[in-house]
Length: 515
Image 1 (cartoon, rainbow, N blue to C red):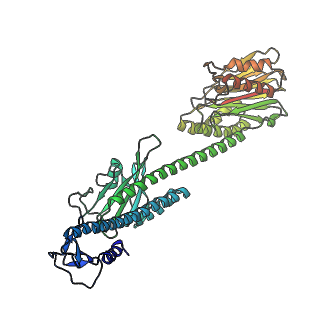
Image 2 (image 1 turned 90 degrees about the horizontal axis):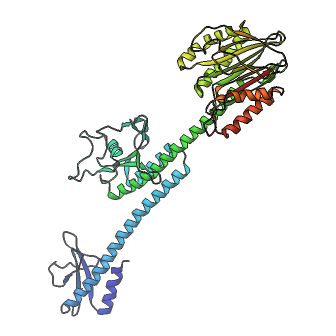
Image 3 (image 1 turned 180 degrees about the vertical axis):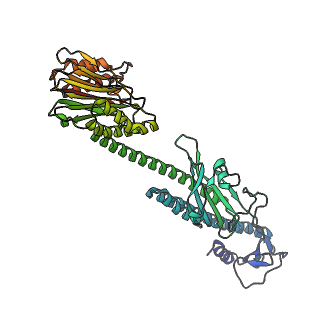
């Protein structure tokens, strides 16, 4: 029962008069509260217009009603206030009902985004919810692909996703592309003859002509909003027009989706980085396993070797070979770069060295055969490889070697500490051919072969000073009576202190052999 239905009988009981409220329905007067009474004419003296309610009158029937015109007008004002309050209450209730649906939608979408990692899955559910609330038969979500500069559909309702083509961002006829470029909402109401259709002249293949196209924006805290996609809604159920409330609601949803898309991209990027890190760690482990343990020649010589990559993988390597008889093969190489490309050349060089060093008649022949095996890869990558390979024959007291441009190869006298550089005998692999091997006397149990790469020599401290060759050789010279392992540890301890533990800018490799 309405307030008016309670008020009018109460007035009649108190005053002994009958009060009726009439409303014109366009054809005749009708009672607001049904009674079996014939309607008066609109010009009847007993009718008093109710203020602020067009087409509504108050009728006072009973003793003295005609004499008390001022009282009827006052009563009409009261009745008008009551009816106005009821109308306003109905409107507020309707608006609250609509807002509840919108608030519930936003909450639902927050729940979807909070419990879904896969963006495509979340987007499909969100489109379904949004389309239901704004009563759109068809909805699409397009996300920007920066590499191709396209808007790619990732979710759809009312149309198969596979039927949708990507949209070029600079397409002059695409409303979605224009919305993305201008970062503002475009909508069209076909019943509004004043507002032009923002699309191109050709007819769109929708059931209804009205549409909403809303940019999906994202702004980092304190940052400027940037467009990352577009939501399109068409084919509205019922009236072929979307309301201003629909536009505001979809814009709010678009902001949520924008944050979700950016979060999904960050998650994907983080997962990709984690995957790359795992692959790099695996590659690093595999690369270290390619290089032999000093134990392979432990029966013939005292050897220590260490390779530290500047990146997870690097281009430095060494090899130790137990050759026929008491002979020992020692190799060190440095690819002209580091990272994945250098690691590939390094792995190929390791494989080739294991084959050719065993079969070649001399160190120079081993390098020539290795260069043939690596020629195509070195040319393709535009890299080169400095390489030193020596064959030590302690019983014969000789060391034969070939040096393909490797600068840091020394023979240290175990008695005097003097260091003799084993000069290059040919260019680095990949830069030319030729050259003959060299040989030197080898003093058994006194000579020390010291091989290292640029990463040790070029390491710098905070002042910019280089670690240098002489600093490496001084450890070999001063500790020449110690084991190869003790000398190696001293060098790496010193370089760590010298650089303050800063990350290496180049691979660092050291091989020491005493036999």
